[in-house]
Length: 317
Ligand SMILES: [Zn+2]
Image 1 (spheres, protein in one colour):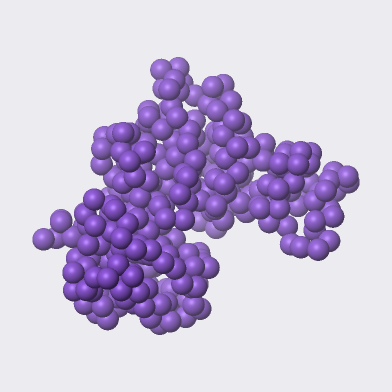
Image 2: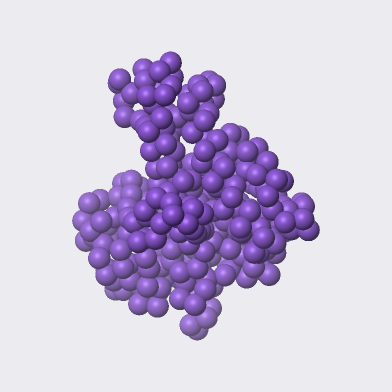
């Protein structure tokens, strides 16, 4: 049996699965502020997943952990994380392994999301697909020719840092014009804020009197056909579409899968992306590419972390 853990800025989610990806128990717990407390929460979550499934902890073969940020998978270390600022060269895998006595592996959050989606029946029919996670930033993963592609050191598919505007906005990575500056939840909020003055009748003015502007609010108003909110979604979809055109032209995938919080607005985004693909991607590449939003957003990354734990354990044994 395998445990998969998905650490987000707000919650830590976990599943216990068998070798076929059947979920035997699941649970979550809030993400504490300090690294030591996060270790403790992970350990209690492992205990509670085992007891919920009425199984002995000794029967768990491995633990996989997915987290956002720069990861040294060989050392089991989180180099830095945009969600959890207390982690700086933090030996998370070694700590969990030492306390729990179970072999532990870590992986980037977008890669675990990709692995989780792939393990689900719906995705197993694709041999080549790209996963894009749309949240505060933009992440990615890929399955190529039936194999999870991880690059030289596990840092592949940083789709969010693909240059789409050569002289564009500065990015925290040091580059300019990165996709995530134009096509993330952050970009959606920034674009809306910048254009508020031009749209004096926007319902967003009223919403902002009582609450802070978020991607969720912009989505709610876009559904009600607010002109600015719709324009903001058009803006991010145009850029995301351009990024996806690059990926289609390079990988010739069967599908592009959208995950992450912002993919909940897929009904607005996907038709616009499809239009950009039809207009811009190469003939012979774009035909038949499916653009799909992940359905079971909550469970996919932890399921993928369990799958990665299983695969990595096989490689070291
Ligand atoms: Zn960047």
